[in-house]
Length: 457
Image (cartoon, rainbow, N blue to C red; front, top):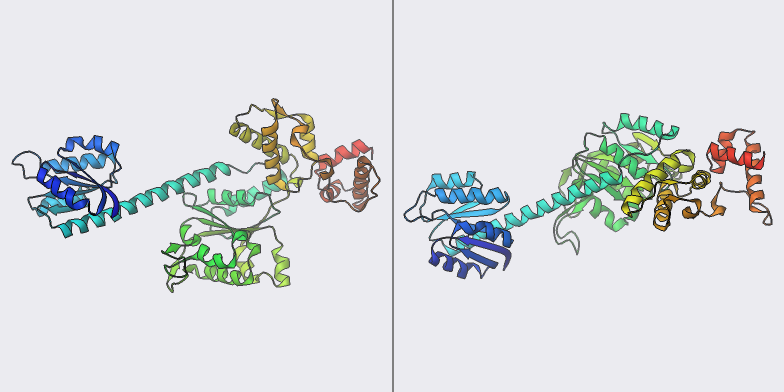
């Protein structure tokens, strides 16, 4: 039984009865009607997969003009409708004309049951394939729109970000492999998407692959695909992520987590620009732009023998090092404002700004989780806030988390004394160099100046 609904349109009751009796043995549902004038109503009320359409309705007519008219009408409603025309008058020229106008096939009456079934069965497979492709196209378009909304633009005008944007403008239009380094939460995926958005591949797919979540058993099948029967659950051929990203950009996140065995397989693909599906020997060419990212020290890993040097050379034609949020100064407030607007809209809140205490608190905090932590803090504050602005109490930042990593201190000291001592030690260590002292404490220069003034140092 084929899961398809067939609409049969013919002015001959005997034809309709014959068709219904035969076809209902093989197809889920068969709908019949005598007049093509009912087409609009039937198509609006039913999910029709195949249409079997007679070409002549007026008594004595044999030229097929009516069938061609209704064919065009059906396709004007939906170009994807599968229409098979039928007539008692064999005419090669008419058949050619019908196919040119969009008919899927053409059969003669009286038909042979086996031939009719074969024609409709093939047409049903075509219909299902078309629906699947359309669905995938919609999903792809939706995902790309969601991705574009999620990574609208890079927020920030601090000096480190300006330098990165300057490099990005030069690199994005090329197909150079880019390695993005930085701590967790610094926005590596945002920068990767920005590279894609300004590249020649911007209208094609941006494929994000989290390598950290793939174990060795899934690595090859997910990235390179597999053939039917390659392993127990391989019930059909499946392309891998590299094939799916054809013509676009593939972003391999957490590349530092790959074992040496997986690194070797990835290197082979990058060198040859081909993939071989599991269970196949056929090589398939790939055309993708490669961007990778990690928070791990790859150069140290090369020295330790845990990361291949030839793979590192292959992936870092250009290298971007993203700064931690604590080194981005006023960008903290710009990002906070950006997230405030976004989450206020999402949760239908009317929140306009942060009060001065909240702003100072955000500038003083060292943000170990970087931009991602800031995003979560602002989202939580928007949800919990009852006023028209975000106050320091809404941020829920623990006082013990302020400042950088501390050296062992006396446990009986007050928090303020501990903070003062840390600031004084950092300034003394760097002989008054505020920039270096601030960097060691995980503070901005402005935040450190406020503490110097507060403690009268």
